[in-house]
Length: 108
Image 1 (tube, rainbow, N blue to C red):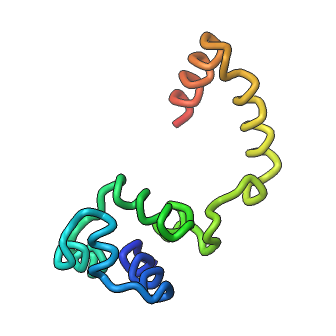
Image 2 (cartoon, one colour):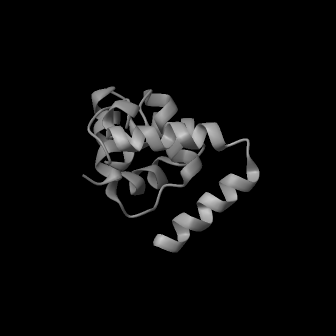
């Protein structure tokens, strides 16, 4: 599902008018309507604003997940969670982090 369909569905499910969302985003109803048609790319800042407005994740708006909370740690495999734990522990150690990034780039 494309993001523009998601923002339209969110608006309709909230019983809001395009004029209300346009005002919230600081744009015109016509310009906002182009977002919902997919004729204009929505800026990252405005996508964030909509996610906050509807209390959903950017992942949901982007169509990456059907869970309005977005992707969560529980969606990851055990190996992915373990790698995140290691990365969290190493984030303060600049030299190791630089080395890990170089290794990741080498295997891409």
